[in-house]
Length: 466
Image 1 (cartoon, helix red, strand yellow):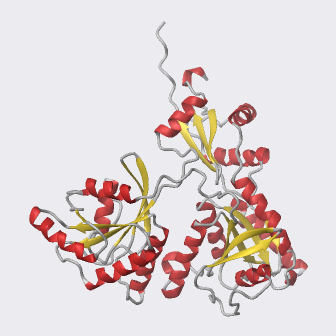
Image 2 (cartoon, one colour):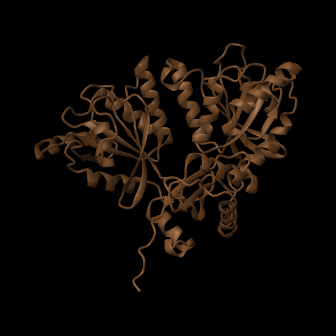
Image 3 (cartoon, helix red, strand yellow):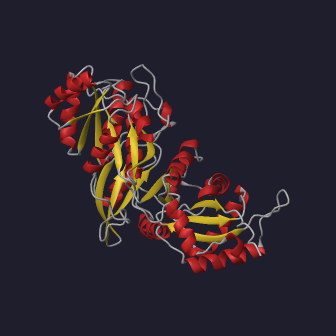
């Protein structure tokens, strides 16, 4: 161990020095909005210091809401690039505008970009009204200010009534530093590390699933009244519906969502909105209940929704609905489907229910508690390294190219979900990392939560001179 010079203090220093999270609060979100072709993506690239966002001199190139990690003056930021915002748009343009609205809803501060060479348009003024109603801090960006003469023209943007216009040239970088200083000044104070676990507040549960699997019926059954429209026509629910529900003697905040039909990029019109709003609901949830129609074979959409929850780092419960309608043959085939297709989520608690009759819906509470407990679990460093010492001794990594990588030290860098950093003497193959995850679960539980495992490969120290 000494030749690699790894101990707990060194490990934590490396985690902090290299930007790995150690129970950090989520970085604040900065949404970049504006009408088409004002230079939003160029500005995002300037903030990032690299070419990430697609830039083309054609309106509407950016369609999706895309998030990037950035940093300024030692503070981490999530910068969200959006498509051009036309408030009264229709069709695909309306979908792009909806994404921009969602970005504003999720943001801590909004950068509103205006083309200073054109000046304030009717569309800009309409967007300003929407931004005012949002109540979010707004930083007005006067883009395409390449010289002093244009900077003088940019002062006319005071007329928008949302504060000082900050002149910049996203293309050349002029004024970008001052702009980012203004963004930092507009941000709220640094959030506390455990942002998601509000003391005494109701836990947040997202109900997900493809259309017509019974999400709204389940919410009505839990609420003991008809609060959500239920219809046999798939897609009745379009917007997430938040409900405070008493369950198991406690309050829970349930979010009913629209069913996800197809792949995100194939969705059109209202279905496109539905997918975006479902993703938003998942972002603000702590645990997701994914409803599956037990009477039908597992579909690609079912698997994709479960993968969406895992990728978002949320805890997970899988509820098999319409269980009361199954015969023995279907139950047999369902068990085989689960073993074969849900191998990546075997750790998720499973509940067999009937949303229509209420059968076994009371079992949701212990399943939710199990998932949330796993999501917030922490293993002491000494206990974790004792586990790895025994694991590596009993099951060493296969020798590759004459070398045998090993785990030198391990630490849990965070929770919600549990995140582990392994300091190793070489690259651990994916199969061995899956083996490590399986044994971690066998030893410490982590039921109902994804686990993130990252490696930091450490070189040997140079031999000391005698």
